[in-house]
Image 1 (cartoon, rainbow, N blue to C red):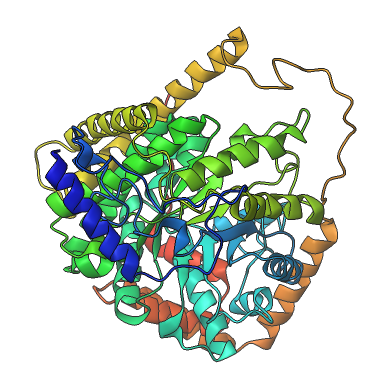
Image 2: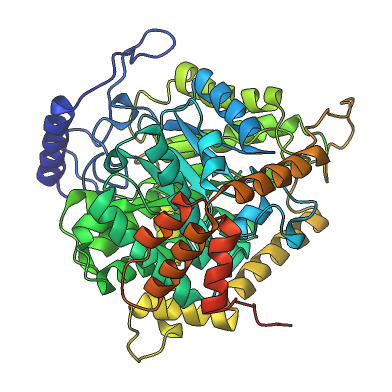
Length: 562
């Protein structure tokens, strides 16, 4: 790019920066030295390829979505939490918000994630153990008791039964008196990654995509600020993928959901801003920063050039980051504080929009109050003490970071081409990327490549080529055993007792009628969300809603592969 084009870009950035709102804060170094809001080539200088780097707040958004970077607003501290019953988790949420957290992120227990009630035989021994148990809309009311849902952004990490859980959330907000059209938050809903990595599905892919399409339509029409899909790479990376595979599989899934929206006749400029992303931040510091920068650039280019988006917000890739749970070790767990801090810093330097930091004891159990506070304070130290919020994309122009960004982008593009090839030449009713994803799921293409990457890394660990402190090097320690959080069996017994009481107190005929109406809607092209909302209002349980759909659509079983 020649000097005139670079200088024109700087002038555009300056005008947008000057017009934007900035925080009232001290933007100097620890020593008091003023710093510029962004850095780039000197005036009058040429820089080959600078159009791929650019300026913050301008296409291709490599350097961030906003001209102000974090000077305008910092990332949202969104700590993932949930355990035991709704009352216990409600107390943890109030602690997080009271200590400076900016949003809520709900972790559900395994029965809830699989669309089962707490009294289901398959739920035995699992209630409240890896997240909070939610059986009915009344549980949602308790979960958010004393927390104004109209005033806090709420993320819910659930995919298979995401839509009925979302309906229960809406009912809880209604019962608070909230204006549902003003609700803001994110629902994960990403079923593709379940087949690829996490394995928490209910039905075959097509019925799930039906529900997701209905949800996209409903939110675009009724709750425009709410993001009905958080396309998740986190679980793909935790399963053993490389950084480039995480990026490529995740963005491919995102393109599939874009095709789903287009197949429903939705305007890409209206629904694409409702798609958000969820990435892992692992320990290779610069690789992670490069991954996040490449993600924004790829998304903007594909949305503009392939899917025809014209509005700026439709080109924006907004993402939440969680530090790498798989990097935490049971050996010398206090070292996990350091790992989490490094991973969090990589996410911030990569421009994350919100962030969860793992607690040091999460490889052993759910976090204690103390370890949860340390995880929260890790973000606050980065935000308040390190100066990383003062300059947008401070590593932009680094030869190493730019080369890594280009390399990861190129690897991702090669993977996109292979996924589309999997779909063959025939048209798919949703789109070509969707066709390739579904074929890749059916053939085990994704799981096979992830397994191979995980095997290569494990071999490197066992040979000692890759190091983990406290595991295969520096294993001596004076640390003592941690006190961990344990969920009492009484939680399950109490949850089942409360559920039985609610079932006996409700109007059974209203529940049956609402479920029958929902199934009627499923047999037509009618949007299913209003009927499912009515079932949630009648206190139909999550298991009852999902069982009715299982009876109609069947269940999915992954083919055996050897």
